[in-house]
Length: 615
Ligand code: ADP
Ligand code: MG
Image (cartoon, rainbow, N blue to C red; front, side, top):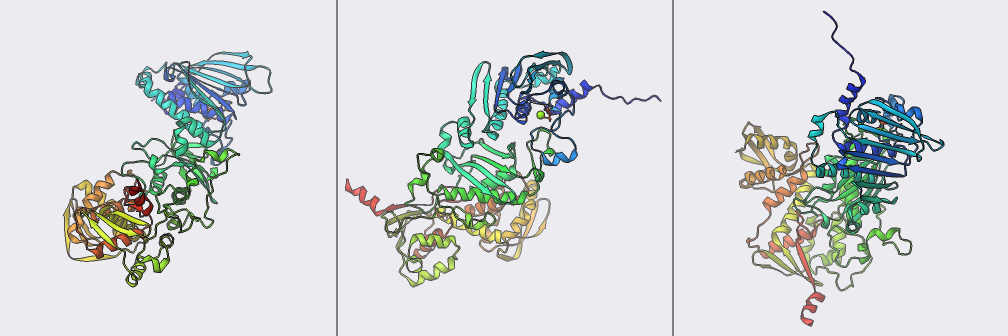
C-alpha cells in the first residue's frame, strides 16, 4: 500500500492554530496589546471598526522590529521571547509561544509597519491568508503599527459565528480594561468607529482604576498591601457597602497578567465573611507579584488560568490581607462608635502632598498566617472612655475589664465566654427587656442598645460553629438509635462530597446508600429532631456556592447551621436567656452584623435620646 501521511502546508497549519489562539476579535486585541507591552511601549493606541470585525489596529511606540524580524514575526514559532525550554520557567513577557501573529496572518488581512529607534526608515509588510503580498521600505514613526482587517475573511463559518457588535465590543473592552489595569504606567487610548472610548494617561494604580470605572470608584477603594517571602500583594478591595449583586468588578493579576481563579476568589469572599448580604459579591482589584518560576501560566491555551506552586499559602495570605485591610480601614463594622473620622478620608488624598495622610495605626505584630488574629479587628483607638458617645455596658464587664472597649479588645484576645459568665455572677446584672418577642432592649452606660434576638443569635451560633469546626475537635453526641434520612441521589452525592467537613463539625455517618444516609452521631449543639431540617438547609445553601471542590465548606456550613438553629422571632426569652444572649453576642468577634450581613443591634446614646427631646 502506498504511504498516506502528508505534512500539512504552513498556511493550513496556521489556520488550525488560529482556531485556538483567535476565537474572536477580542483575542486579537489581547495578543496585539500584549506584543506592544512586551516591546516596551509607553503609549499604546487601539483603533477599532465594527467591533473589530472590519479593523483592529494597535499602534505602539515600542522598540520596533528590524526588516528581517518584521518578516519573521509571521512565521509559526517565531518568537524573540524564549530561546530554549528553560526560559519557559522564567517568563517576564506576556507572549512566548510565537503563534499569535502567524495565526492572525492566516485568517485576516494584515498590515505591519515598524521601525526601530536607531533606523532612518522602517518596513511595511502586507499579508493575506499567510501570503506575503508586499514588502516595502517606508518612513514611519518609531514603534509598530499592526492593522488586522476583515478577520476570518477566509473562514466564513467562523465569521458567521461572531456575535453582535455590542457583544464583541464588550469582549474587546473587557480585554482592553484588563491590560490597561495591569499596566497603569502605560498610556492607552481606544477609539471605536472614530469615537474616543478611553484616553488613559500614564498614572498610578488607583488613578487608573478610577479612570476606567469612574470617579465614584475612588471613595470605595480600600488599599491592600502585604509582602511576604513568597509574594507581594497590592491593589484594592471595595468597601463591603459597595458590594454588587452581579459578580462584575473582580480582578486578579499575577505578575501583571490578568487571571481567573475561583480558588482565590473564595479567599476574598471568605475575608468578607459576615460583611456581605447573601447574594452580594465583593469588588476587588488584586495584584500578586510572585517569582516567575513559582507559577505555570502554560496550563491554559488562552492563559487566564495560572497554576501556583504554593496555592494554599497564597489563599491564607490573601484572606488575611483582605481581612486585615478591612479592619485597618475601619470598614468592617466593628464596635467602634466614636471612631476617628479621619479614617473615612478618601484615600485619594494620599498622593497629594499638601494634605496630610490619614493616620492609620498599623499593627506591627500582624501575622497573616495566624488567621484568628486578623479578623476585622477594630482599629486601635486613641480616644478615651470619657467621650460622651463611647458606650460601655454597666453590667458584668465593669468589674472584669473596666470598659466596653477593653472588653472588646479582650474578647478579641479570645477570652473565653465561660470566663465572662463567671464574672457576671459576681456583679450586678444589666437590665434587659424583651419587646414583642423579637427584640431585646438593654441599658448601657451611655444609653440603650436594641438587639434583634434572632439575628444576634445567628451571629453567636455562627462563630461558635466556625470555631468548633476549624479546631477539628467538635463534640459529637452519639445517637442511641441511628437515624436514616432519605435524599435525592444528587443530594446524597453532595453530602458525601462534604462528608469530612461534616464529620469535623461533629456528624458521624454510619452508612451511605444511593438515596439515604444513616447518621450515628450529631454535633452536641443540634438536637435529633432538627437534623434533617438543617441538612436540607445546608444543601440549599451549598447549591448557591461557587462550585469548586478544592476548599472546605466550613463557612457555608456554619452560616447554614446558624440560620437553621437560631432562636426565631416570636420566641419568649427568660431574663436569664436574654442576658446570656446579650453577653454572648458582645463576646463575638463581629457582634454588630449577622453572618449574612444584617445589623444585629443598634445603640441609642443618652446624647441622642436627649436630642430627641430637646427640640
Ligand atoms: P510571541 O509574542 O509569543 O513571541 P507573536 O506571534 O505574538 O509571538 O510575536 C512574534 C514576535 O514578533 C515577538 O516575539 C516579537 O519579537 C515580535 N513582535 C510582535 N509584535 C511586536 C511589536 N508590537 N513590537 C515589536 N516586536 C513585536
Ligand atoms: Mg505575542
